[in-house]
Length: 211
Image (cartoon, rainbow, N blue to C red):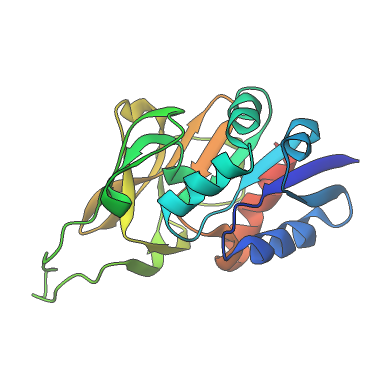
């Protein structure tokens, strides 16, 4: 049986991600919470959930000695990053006064601009919270059965700005168009929350287990 390790660094949505994966795995994959380097190294697939602040995330990964095994696994096995699990892949984030990320993807994480108005003259709210359409930029196995423009659930105040936009797998518009999914080799990461996105989110998680 293939094993899927969900990284535990204190994210508040850890259990909901685990439950969603267990549901779509239907007993064909073993879903476990990874708290040690060994858990990550021995797993067949890695899921990096995300909800919270990036500084606390990075400090927790370092304290648990998970950074190096995580970086090694990203190069060799299927990896899925969710929300903060996407943002942490970049080199630097503006959050918390500036925080160094894992540096897997060159670029930074920026905050949405304050005070912007929509077409009706209403001020955009930050964080970006709720359902929004995701426009796919190219085919990928994780998009199987999910049409471009499908709506997913977002909760975030920051968004990724990779130096090389060739890694972009999808975009979303809020205040302006931003990259909401990236892919490279064994890595796929999204800004939205599949575990909160009903049918489309469960389809994406199913696709990841089949990838």
